[in-house]
Amino acid sequence: MTEAIRKPVCLLCGSEKSKHYKQIESFGHPVSYYLCLDCGFVYQNEAETIAKDDSFYEENYRTLYQDTEEPTAKDLRQQTLRAFDQAQFLQGNHLAPGNILDIGASSGLLLETFQHEFGAEVTGVEPGNAYRALAEERDIQMFSSLSDLLETNYKPFDLVTMMHVLEHLPDPLETLRKIRKELLASNGALLVEVPNFYAHESFELAHLSCFSPHSLKEILHQAGFEIQAFRKHGYPRSKTLKLYIEALARPIVGEAEPGKVKPEACVPLKRSLSVYWRKMMSRLRPKDTWLEV
Ligand SMILES: [Zn+2]
Image (cartoon, rainbow, N blue to C red; front, side, top):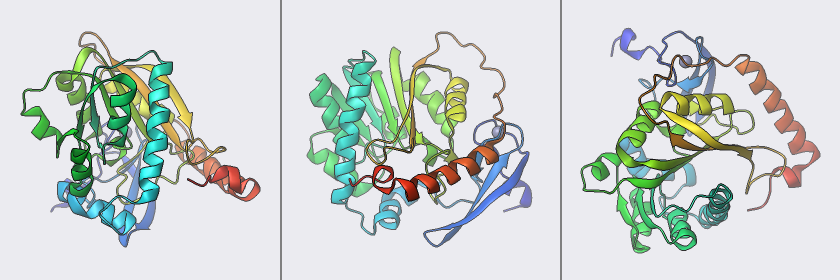
């Protein structure tokens, strides 16, 4: 591969102007993060990361992260708590979807919960073979990839959910646009949650993007969505750290040009302060900061 092809390209604004920001080692692999000099986004170079390949998620991802391809009890417990919290968030925003798609559906716990809470029809996309098999055992219609689903005769969805998925994608903006144009009903809604770069560790092999509240809003805007509700929270992991950011968004009617990405200033400084705060909270209020799940 030539130098030119390997040049980092910002996953938010597409700029090639960047500086090397952070080098880490994650699961035995070197991982480089870049800071976009045009918009302030922090991301991995899509051309050099191993975490962009489909095969990575089919078998390797869970094995690397949990030493097993099967879901762990801790994992399932966390997912159950999260699922009920997400259902409450949607109910609090007056959503009662009848037809739901979860991208990155894992073992289907979120969909199973939504099936009960909303009486909804549910569909999932999950590349991990072991997790998808568990969801199928729950009688959930599952696909191994978005492109497989797109080839079927599906009905547009009232709600598409992506919990901790966007940060893994090599083309997050394109995927959001595809969801808006091809998967969502015109009055549908999108629910997205990602780790918060200003509270969560964020740097790890499979995280190609590091989202802040600003850049999550910005990527949704660029993809043609407007935000209906936005929150930062730590549930169920922490009472003191807002580890996650979440947006409920609606497709903007008509094809309005989103304009240029609004840059975010002082990203490295905000990150440094958040790392300091996290250390302080971990030391001063360890039990509230890292809850037993
Ligand atoms: Zn950028």
